[in-house]
Amino acid sequence: MQKIEGPACPKCGCMESTLVRRCTEWGKPTERRRCDHCRRVFTVQPPDPEPRKMVDYPLPIACPRCDSYSVETVTTRLPLRSHKCRDCGWSFQSVDRRHAAKS
Ligand SMILES: [Zn+2]
Ligand SMILES: [Zn+2]
Image (cartoon, protein in one colour):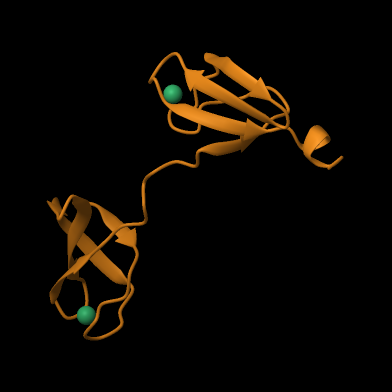
């Protein structure tokens, strides 16, 4: 069992609940939780796990999804660069602040 201090119980407002199971509703991940205080079971949507698509340029660039540094630069159109992670295939962009500041 995984204990996370998380969303408040809709019944008693207690912040401590136990993860019962994860499931998917309408294509979105949801979590069933049981309140440690009143035992009420409720459903919450965890924060969007989608990683940011944009990172700041100054190297090293790490994949925002898997933290790999094995990242290639696909296109450069300053201040934006497009990258692709060699490890997980995630595509993302970085913004070069030095160039962005000039405009
Ligand atoms: Zn409760
Ligand atoms: Zn990656």
